[in-house]
Every structure is written in structure tokens, then in C-alpha cells.
Image (cartoon, rainbow, N blue to C red; front, side, top):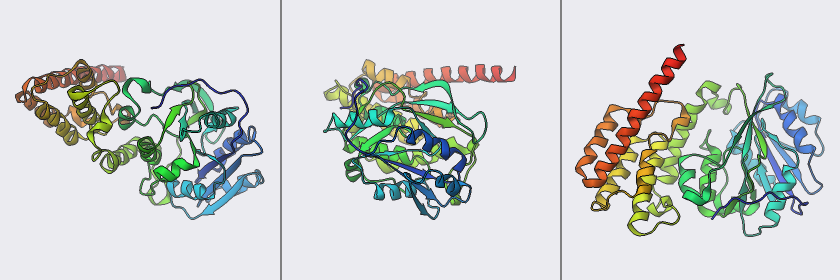
Length: 378
């Protein structure tokens, strides 16, 4: 069971393979590599996989050889490039890192020491700090926002992860064995590659939160994304994430045994009921109204004589809120879905409770939308 722990301070023994897939980002790759070389230790290695870049990437990399190892391949996407780096990795620990992000000082040794002291753990996760590039292609500047990993002792590690990827970007620092047990990156995924891997890893391996301090700068920028065969602009990024997150739901989550959606400190019918509500929330978070409704109906029919517990009510209450990250209108606010929610009232007390909570949340969401529209027109 993952838990938050204190940061580490001493020097690590284990070596790290830093793997950096890159495509058409030579100008920003320089800042990433410089930050790593400032803290690279004798036992570490950096492997850059150039995924068919045609910009200045090759010229930039000549500035860092050695010690940076460079592998070239035709353009196949981030998953293929990361997997090529994993094949070449020779150290005990692995950190797959984005070419446009920046490791913070001392983090490499801190992460390695964390796993040194916990031989039973397969990986650790760290928060990140958001950064922007005031000048395109220039150095990043932190903007003050720090992403905090949720309290995994409250709902457990899986239910929150199924709803949202709290191990995003380069947050995962792993042992080599984690990739052997969970598999590598799925090349079908042109976005959400890390999310797909993170869920498989969380299902199969042990992990903990390293500490509350951010380990790297996650940089925001306006550059195009994706491999050459499916390049897209920054304004499409959240729609692409939604597309692949929906694919991920049916690949990994829909067929899971219901107990994977359960939460700690629950048992019996309460555990089952909350697990079914959490599966509905997971589908809602991916904007999948039919799958959401299926789980809600299952809760009403399998436990038809049991009213919702307070934890279930709280989970249903927030169901409309999940998935807002995609910044597209949720299908849970559409009339067809809301009519289906009203029809749940015929499924006993639980159905009436679910309908009341969802319809109440829908009204609040509409009010917020109206306030936001007024604000935007001022």
C-alpha cells in the first residue's frame, strides 16, 4: 500500500539510467541535459533516443557527448523511443524523462537513495512544479504552482489513479524489474502512454510517494505534439488525451474485477457498493456516460435493499466534477444522460439517492457555467 514518506538526504549507491526520448525539440533539450549533467554521478547514465528529429537536435547533442549516449531511430512516437531506451538501459534504476522538462537540483541522488533504502519497493513517485517558457525555446521559469499527489491512505492508490493520472509526466522513478513485471510503453498510445503504463504498474507492483517536495519542472509550451504521422497543435492536446484515456478505460479498466475499485477500511456490502460507485466515477471521468450508467444501475440492483452509505453519497456527489480537466463539455450534463439518471428513481432508495445527488450536482455545474460565461464577457 503506497504511503507518503519523508525525503531522503544521504548519498545513494544505486546507479540510474535516465532515458530521454526526443523529437523536434533540440532547443529545449539543451536545458534538460544541462540540468541532469549538473547532478550526474559516476554510476549514472543518460540515454537520449532521437525519434527521427530533423531540427537542430543532432547538433545540440554533440555538445554533450560524452557522457550522454545517443541512439537514433526513424520516427515511431514517444512509446517506441522510450522502449528503445529501456532496451539499452544498464543501471538498476530507470527514470524516463520528457525532453522539455527540467530535473530540480539533487533529485537524482534523492530518488535513488529512496529506493536504495526500500528494497521491496518497485517504484517511487514524486510531485512536480509547473513552469512556463517566457521565450519560446528558452529556459523555463517556475510559475508557483506545485502539483500535489492525493492522500493515498484515504481512498487507496487505485481509485484516484483510475479517475486521474496523478503519476503524470516524469513522476515515476522505478527499478528495472518494474518494467519486466508490468511491461513497457504501449506503442498504440500516441498520448497517455505514461497513464497506461502507470495503471499497469500500480496493479502489479508496489510503490510509495517519495515526498511532498517537487522533483522536476513540468513545462508548459505551445509546440506541436505527437509523432509525424499524427502531429497536432497545442489547442488539441486535451481532446487527444480524452481520446486515448477513453481507449485506456476499455483496454485496462472496464474488465477489472470490481474489488479493484474498492477503498480501504470498507467491508461487505459497503465495500461492494462503494466499489461500484467508484467504477461509475471512473467512467464519468473519461466522459463515458453509458459505462457510468451501467455501474450505477449495477449498484442499485445488486444491493437493492441497501441505501447509500455516507461515503457512497460523497462519491456520487462529486461524479459530475471528475473529468473537467479535459476542458470539454461533459456528456454527463446532456439531457439524455440526465433522463437516464431520473429513471434510476424506480430502483429503490439507492436509485432515488443517486438521482438526487447527480441532479443536484448538475444544477451547481450549470450555475458555475453561467457565472463563468458572464465573467468571460465582461
